[in-house]
Image (cartoon, rainbow, N blue to C red; front, side, top):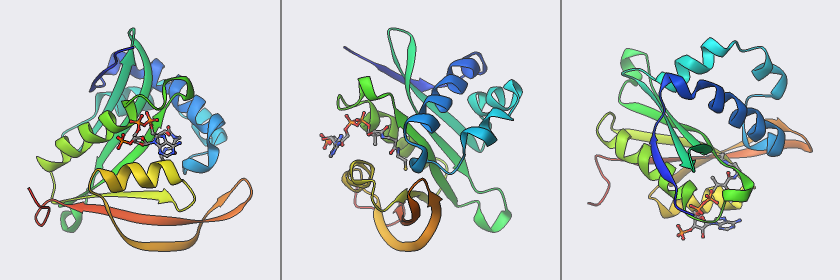
Length: 171
Ligand SMILES: CC(C)(COP(=O)(O)OP(=O)(O)OC[C@H]1O[C@@H](n2cnc3c(N)ncnc32)[C@H](O)[C@@H]1OP(=O)(O)O)[C@@H](O)C(=O)NCCC(=O)NCCS
């Protein structure tokens, strides 16, 4: 079935909240946030994330008007970090995986980032093979690994740090 990727708007806030809860319950080790932390966030927080700003943007993949995937862009705020941004919250519902939605979402964030910043970074659990492979195929290069970066459900997990430097990326 075809899906559409677009930037989220404020009206997508409730669908975004539902998808984020699904993501945190389904793959808790793939995200820094916990279900408990997320539950404390008011709907207004999700409205703000969905709406985005001149520095942040949220993208969604829709299938039959239902939100089935998401990916976010968060740009550095401090003056000395404004050339960098981070790809965050990449998730596709299990029943919609393997059909290109993840790739399309990350490509949308990369295209957006290329117009906004010099460097797009992502932090990914070293044992998350599908995500690491996806990012590598789309041009992210690993520049480091943080040992025991996160306390996951089964113990401490290493994180790979990956980035695209648009100023040196081959066109
Ligand atoms: C990572 C994720 C977003 C990929 O979404 P998806 O919709 O299944 O991805 P796509 O169908 O676009 O596939 C993207 C690429 O990954 C490959 N791929 C997909 N699932 C894979 C798997 N389980 N193992 C290996 N490769 C896989 C595909 O072959 C495809 O490669 P191609 O574009 O060169 O053909 C999805 O698996 C997911 O939501 N995982 C849980 C959340 C997560 O780990 N997020 C990352 C946090 S940093």
